[in-house]
Image (cartoon, rainbow, N blue to C red; front, side):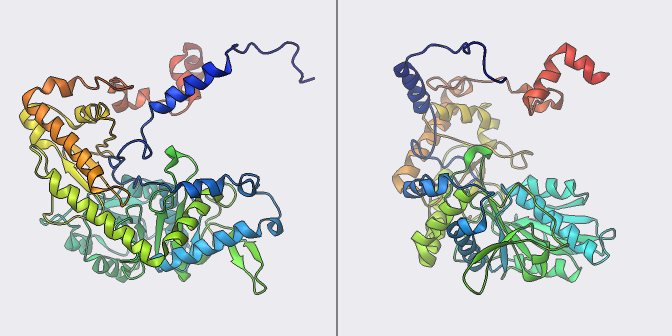
Length: 471
């Protein structure tokens, strides 16, 4: 009954023409294979070893199904288990779940664990506040707010670091937890972080750590010694799996023994005879945060990357990332119109810079420079909103790029700065030789025009659907 009565009206196009079309599209795509990809600061865009891509394309991986019997997937469960052990060593935590499919979902899971922990102690209603910092990622406050928490935001002290005295004044019997990125999204590392976690613990709160910006910390410092009860790493950033444009990623969520009963399950466990099983969590678990167990391909890539480097190699990753970043930092501060607000001296693995001086003197904005960088075949990112740093741009060179790569990027910024001061219209009207063009961005600031799904778009553009919706 489902058989077509007539052939579908598909376009008749020769294979060669189709191939040429998609090859041309591929040549218009920017990425770490084609250009110096340091312009997506806070997202740790690094080179992905191609041998690891070959691993996940092996039929033994591509033909896996999440509903297979555990006896038939012992090899993959062993990899999940061994990566768990490696992440424990890297962080000092006691157990990991690879179920969250992003850093933000890991943050939501951690906020859920905070809620479940205090509920289990009869303090859920009393402890209704989460403390964070202004330069931490907005997802930290957003996910805690989704769980019903009131958000208290700490601003920096006169030296640019999170204000410890303000934290002491903020904690109380209502404090449920403290969530922070360290280094923050500015690249500033709070060297007094243990004092912060001690203050929160003394008030009865849980401390959880956004380690999306961990590329400068591997093998050097750990969440445990900083006093955190939970942390997450983005396998699709720090551990050399593709970022995937919001696709199959993994926010690896680690906890101490005290919070292990609250983790989303199931967890991979190794029995005495060496057999691997998926062990369900108990009644205290927050429940599943996504379907099945996690993205096996991302887990395999990260596990292979860690094994290929070893402990010393991971530490070298962090050292080179910090070296590259501080070289870039030193050079960019010499460009006319550029600055790096707040602390002076070294940053960690990234920096949130500012073009405020350039904008004040030329009228050229950081969004204009974004488009002009397209003409150089380079990617450049401003910042997530809100723009706490005026006219921001955020760069993270990682360990993947050579001095020559960084110099290429620096020379492009120097050239654009010179244009801004001598012929600003070239920058303001960019791009000129790119496959992209200037878009009307006015709708981005109007929630009434936002259409997250195709169905939402139809509702907002179809008079008939608008009438039905109103009815």
